[in-house]
Amino acid sequence: MAHGSTPHFHNTEGLRSIEIGSKEFQCVGALPPFDHPHVFLDMGKDDEIVCPYCSTLYIYKAELGEGLANPATAIFKANAA
Image (cartoon, rainbow, N blue to C red; front, side, top):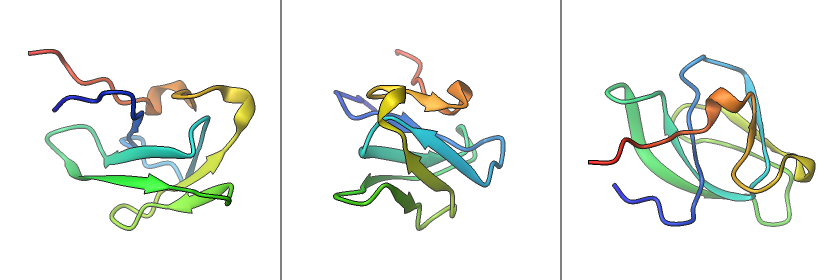
C-alpha cells in the first residue's frame, strides 16, 4: 500500500494515547498481520481523536512536527516491495 504524504501510526504497544504532530493521518491498529482496516482520521479543529476501530486516543502536539509521534515507535513504516 502506497503512503503518499499521509502519515500512518500504529498502537502495537497497546498505549492508552499517542501524541502525534499531524491532524490528518491513518491509524493501522497494530502492526501487520494484526492490523485493522487502515482508517483515515481528520481532527479538524480539535486536538484529539479516538480511532473507531482500536480506541487509541491520538493527541495533536504541533511541536512534534508533521508525521512524528511520541513515542516514535508508533510511526508506521511500510516495507517497500
